[in-house]
Length: 639
Ligand SMILES: Cc1ncc(C[n+]2csc(CCOP(=O)(O)OP(=O)(O)O)c2C)c(N)n1
Ligand SMILES: CC(=O)[C@@H](O)[C@H](O)COP(=O)(O)O
Ligand SMILES: [Mg+2]
Image (cartoon, rainbow, N blue to C red; front, side, top):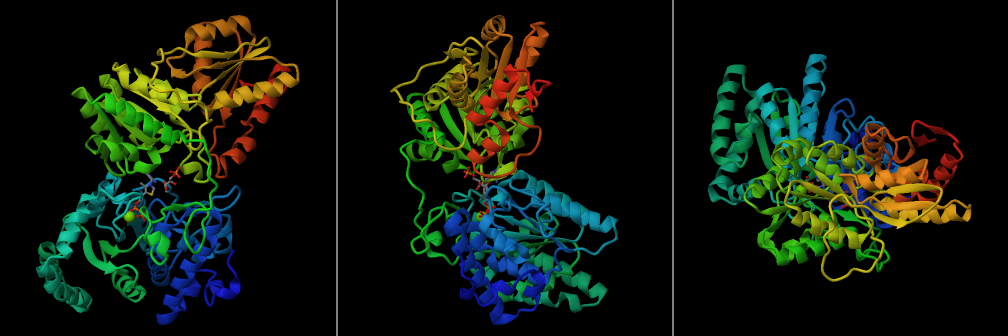
């Protein structure tokens, strides 16, 4: 961990006020120390890394020029805001970032007054900042509002909706475009190609100086002259600068500027701070800046596990267990090789979803659409109208974005789109913005959809195969983050009968009906219960929709008490479906639902969170035993 004596300035920076006292060389020194501190801390505990290394100067310049937290900075997504945390009173707490009970890996309003808007999902910053700018106007305040958005986040449609609205409302709003030409993977932002062409154009370079001169002098003109000059400036810029697209949306464009030159950044922010109307400052940065292993890494060490400081090599111990993601990625390639109608779609997460394997093997049937989950789904719907079989691989949490598209564009038209929801359940260190704990609820209510959850990686392969061959409409499978169970993977695939569950073990005392990750936990809980003389029957339900009604009737005939288990919110999830089924058929049976409470779950390791919520095998066994004894049992849930 960092040694205070290795730092000249950083340990005297306790708030942005301390930055305001620094000038020139000291600002540069501070930037270099922030980088060193990030390397010192993140090499020990892991976390988002490359993005933050690229925003050091930007962060220092913003906090030097603006009067934060009165002035509001909105960081898009938030993974690049570690330097912001370091200079806003959370330097020492950085050692706890993303850990159980530690500070959040993203922006969080309840964590600091400097975190003006919470995030984790991309492309929200301009909308939120515009809201703040309008509020400032209504409240007759003079707060400055700055949104900092990456080029990756600019592939998300909301960013354009917000810019359009900003142009219309003409409020004082500064958008900083942090352009490092990277998303997590190389970015697919088409506008960056246009920027590059513009910037390298000889005419642009010849006129750039002149335009800047004019811009710089504008504020010294009288009102009438200023208007004329502004029009001339805009006219010239519209033809000659890369910003004409933004100018068309109603923004005044400044840049591109070197985002690692603190002196230039401070000067530019001082200049634009008091200008009226929407401003776009285009800043060129390098993801991973200042740490060679990150600069040379294919993903610029976007997120790091603990690593060796000198080499950047991960210290994470290897495991023989495959991840669910890699099993999915390999299975998709196998299936796509034997069915040329199958295509894969990712929303900027090729590696995270395992679709990088398809990209490598069959690139012509792989689509990265950018951070555009809504578009990904409707794009898939279009493909499906022509008999193509799109497999849309999106994390459970990010698919929330495309709720209406799933209903209106896919399900309503019975289109055969396969949804592969990775990171379903509690994801761990990313916390509440990223937990995939709502998908069973938000999908289950949609007519015509089939929803599956595999108990292990072998079943995941077969479910994917089943989904691709289903043809009747939308079909989803959800599986957790992390390592699979290590079961044998047979060659080839087997189709699973839609709506058919699997009895794993018979019992005499009660039935445990489990889905997905909870099947393994149910088996482990049953072993604990067996030691207490309780014989539980275990069913792997496989399908959340349609439910295996025959099995539900069978277990209700055999037992008075039934337990449902799911790694999803208890509101509207699998257990709710089971209760609805029994209720609608007037079947009298006591149902205990085990799952996630109706609250946002904090961050921590998956194990810690499972324990905290009592959904690990020990916790489940305790709940089941209490349920059998009618202890603390209320409204279907054991307290
Ligand atoms: C809605 C949504 N989809 C996907 C992600 C996953 N994600 C997190 S950061 C990121 C890349 C962002 O790129 P950019 O905005 O350019 O920031 P950089 O990392 O380059 O600083 C992605 C795809 C997300 N956070 N939110
Ligand atoms: C910031 C962000 O949204 C991603 O970087 C996310 O943290 C990735 O999560 P996984 O590590 O589960 O792929
Ligand atoms: Mg980027």
